[in-house]
Length: 402
Image (cartoon, rainbow, N blue to C red; front, side, top):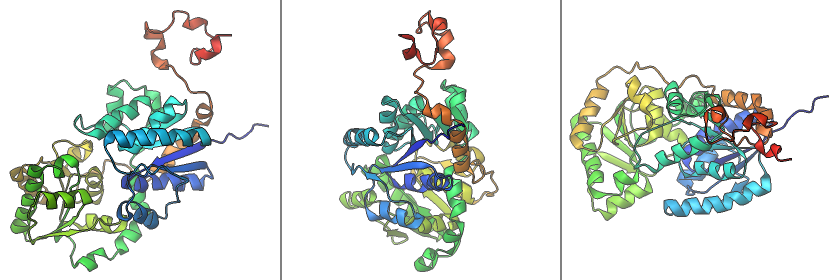
């Protein structure tokens, strides 16, 4: 009788987008009675950035909390690597899920070095902007992962162009599609608009948190002046749930916030999604807002010089305007005067199911020793021993030394 194979999964998260996007994976695992462990790195730890999202999404409590906290990039990475290794040694998972491009995703590197399989969710996104820490993280994770789950045909092509083996790549769509579908009634019934006294299409929704935008006086001043100008031109309130980093910078740089800009504490997932869905226009430096607004068919203007969500620009839901006030204003004018009938590039709300279907299909492979060879290139490379054809198993050369 054939013994049923059981894979032990490990899910690593650490910031708001991780909690939101990994929710469907966790629920799909629960539906399939999978064996899984959740590890929280602790990069986000305040109530508004962490606990609130666990509460609203009814997300299971993590089994481990690494308490990495804030710090420099190097400090965060060093703490996470040291603490995560101990969890891996204790739990011995067969596969580690690494999501997207923030520092918690680099946990996959630790797993890979220990011979544990790695699945990278949202693989293949590229801004081609090496100033961004996230771009470095994306490239690293895509290069070492065993299973790369891409959201679009474009992200899949990015990986193929970089020489990633096609058999590792699986186009499954966007997890946020699952989330927005699963929570659609809770989003629609949320009362945040009543509490703020705003009507549909009668306000701008703004986010700005990236260090290169808010950690330097000049770009932050440009952002605030642009928002003031938008309020004067359109007569619509500017709702700005503000990141603690941005609020601190406004204070330290002694910048003025005009009366038309309503600053408020960060919002929960349900509140923010309700505001996204009903906004006149989103003005942001956030990658997730670019995605959400595209799905909700709300115009978006991105205050950056590059984006890893190029599909939003391609379908016409988003303009990457930079940080010059003139171009931000111009981009908003274009976006709010165009039709919002663009095609959703992210597929149907079935990403988690497709992802787990792939992994179920590859159970035996996941549970087998890790393949250390870039197998499709063995026969073409002078790097490989000329005796490769004499090995009992060319994918597992360790077995040839007996």
